[in-house]
Image 1 (tube, rainbow, N blue to C red):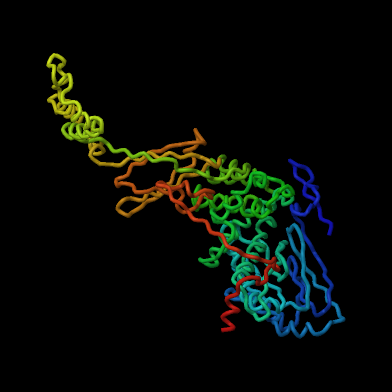
Image 2 (image 1 turned 180 degrees about the vertical axis):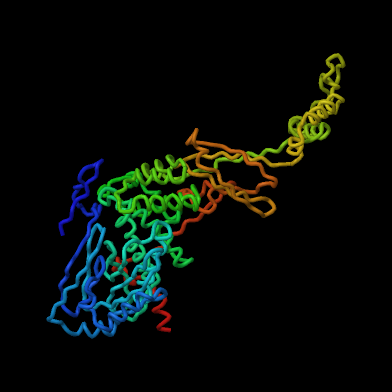
Length: 562
């Protein structure tokens, strides 16, 4: 339906046409909608149903009231058996469903006689929210077990990190693909005909429900311009989705968010990469660029650069400040820096405005120890070094071939140095050492006798993107420790830096980015001594399947047969 374009005081009208990728730029409004459908249909829509007594049966009304008090599990308001009965006929009567929605940027609805409907309440600080699902019998058992609980979980998870969900309902509708609107979204995921399903279908369904319900926060409430900047809603939402997935199941197989999972994209040829700050219609690899890379960048910012507490505070400030407003990328960048008091210019520039990958090489390690030996110990070691240096094959053979040298046979060729022993300890050596020790402070004496090992590490920035240096030192006694150096170490030279580390123990090996948290595209140069990492490939032949339907291995089906 015709919708009003957004007008801003810095850009004017946003009237770019829809070309297939960049979605919507919409302004807020209130809707009152009357939907007339066959009397046996169930309708779900943006907003609150205004005439439930006119369109719901007495039994459905009673169940609806029960659902408003059910915080632990959904109440099925129209059951599968009731929906199956309605499928068999076609009502000639009509019913009009009236919905009212306030302060929303769009309106959507769904209608079918096939729908099963369930709902539960989600407690917020100032109000309850109704989480609901509409689905056909073909969606069971997956939808009845998971959909509404996932909706409720998403509202809680996102709300804890941004703001309390301000709308009265959040709806998930079974469909063939994923799409979001205020208060209502459409999601895929369907078991096989025998009721079994693969883990890919299960987790794919849960993920898409989290994602599409999460869009209520970004961009339905924090109302960015999707047509210009897809990443501002898809990227932020994918980041939030990753956290919600991990809160759902500790072993959740999240596809986007962990740093190392963006590496294949970051290894792409340069002509296939664009900055995140690229207009939606100009992006070649849309999913990686607008969804995965910004989600990964924010996860790295949270886990590795800022730390969870500081990031979470700043991100919540952004969400709260820009509720029901139209933020731009600059608003996001400025708010994150303002709320955290952290200068992140290098991060925004590298991750959002450029395409260079992270590839930092641990080039070399030099080992030093403080020389705290006495003069006698130093001279003894120097003598050994000299004898080792002056012992070679020619000298040994000359003992046989040259019975006597000139100096040996002619005393007049000798002087002081022919009898001088540079390796003997003199009184001056002893006094000089004693005076040196006497001048040291107690702290300096402690350092001199600490027997510390000093390691100078040299790093080279091959990829172009600077990042913090996370180092794991593995010691000869089998223990290890991790040190973290902020990215500011690259401020004066973005190509090469070095740093000295003091260790009580001797180091056996060093690993850069041991937890794979910086999206480094070449891990082989992260080790000293160097380690070769294997790559594996398989021969396979695949066919494209239908989204949300089992197309690969289905262990549940196999177990059922056995």
